[in-house]
Length: 376
Image 1 (tube, rainbow, N blue to C red):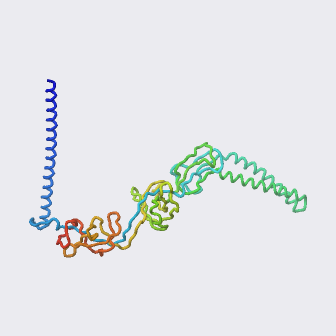
Image 2 (tube, rainbow, N blue to C red):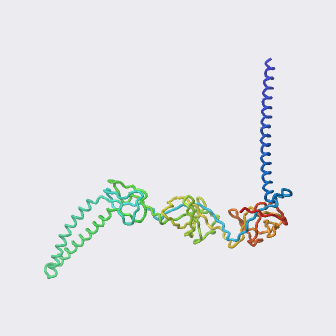
Image 3 (cartoon, rainbow, N blue to C red):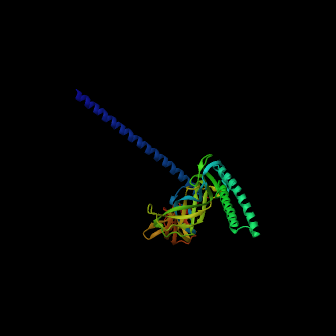
């Protein structure tokens, strides 16, 4: 009994799967029929368009006899090597104080335009001021003694030793006073360059010194780029040749000369660096920004250039289909050079004034009489 139940259950399951498969096949067939109907409608529409192009006559319309053309062009054929490059600035400086002490004022603020010599911070100078006042008192006394000794010596009164000692004491205090005043001037921390204050680190009351930065100043008017180029291109580029720097988000595009090429290959990534100075209007580009560069890898002057897709290959080599002034197809055997970015350099076989068959170039043979239907 149990065995019969199991057989019935198995049969039901098999019937279910068969019906499901049949349903799936029917759905697929229905979809195919729908696609066929859609294509038939498209063909009917195309036939109607051809009828209109043929002056209302539908009979004997040959799709292959309708083509479009584009002119061959003669120009410089240029191939570029594209490489990412990083932006650097020649002046990206951490500003520090020359003498130690506590900051009693910080004038720099982030984003502030700084000029060379502009005060950025002030170190506490109270002790130096007191030292100057003390030394100035000693100096006044020493200068007075020296003046009197000199007057006496000029009258041949007194000893030369006394005169020389007074003179030495006065001059020694002069030098000491000059040194202390120089230290006083260094308590005012000034900008060493023109630029923009990018970051401020110093705070009121903070101890500072030659190793403690107060702020960082960036000059964005003098920037350069470094592009890393694979070692396989060694010897391809020279100083003074053109390099194109591009950054699409800012519509940045400049052609500049190569400033330097490193002579050493980086052992880590087997590249060498190509450097160029680039303009930076309004400070748009920032240090460490990645931009795109193009280096001229190949340049051929005044060549016939055609779309690469139109070049076909046959038993006799490469050829391209053209149409003459009488609407007759001509097959031109050509010798091609290099291809780049969808264009191919033609070294032989075309003059540059031909009409190249674009749409329909694979549907015609030499000698066909065709009708050119270029879009206006």
